[in-house]
Length: 176
Ligand SMILES: [Mg+2]
Image 1 (cartoon, rainbow, N blue to C red):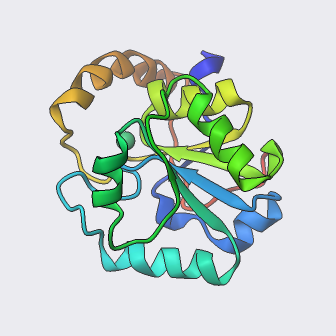
Image 2: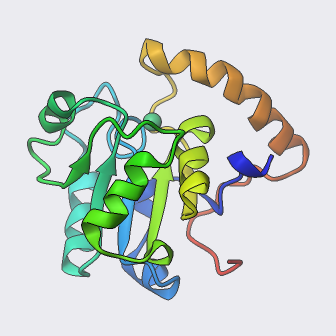
């Protein structure tokens, strides 16, 4: 189903490098929060995350969180990371992504939406007409409210697997 189809499948957000992003004309990474940027059970983030954010910063690539969570929950989660964010993004609707793009003053071609859920992150990215990256969730277990989505997502994932469309790569390839 095209609405849930990601542009790329990459193992983790940390696999994205400034060189690959720039080659695609991408100046800002919009990212989901839970299980994409940080594990829901490890809110401080790993050294790997801090290193990756540093790398993006040095390369002049903006990282902005686009999350369905409320403002307080996100500012608590990002207290040590100092990242801009859009709260209550209403994914799978394009509202939050459109708001982020406007705030950044970039064209849609210059941003990419990264997330671990087809039914929210990827659907929202597609609805907003930006390119998308599906990543594997950082931890296998989810917060309770995500499990319901996961159940429905299972059908879509199963179909992608059957069609051999579920191959996560180490980096952004040049197919698009
Ligand atoms: Mg998530």
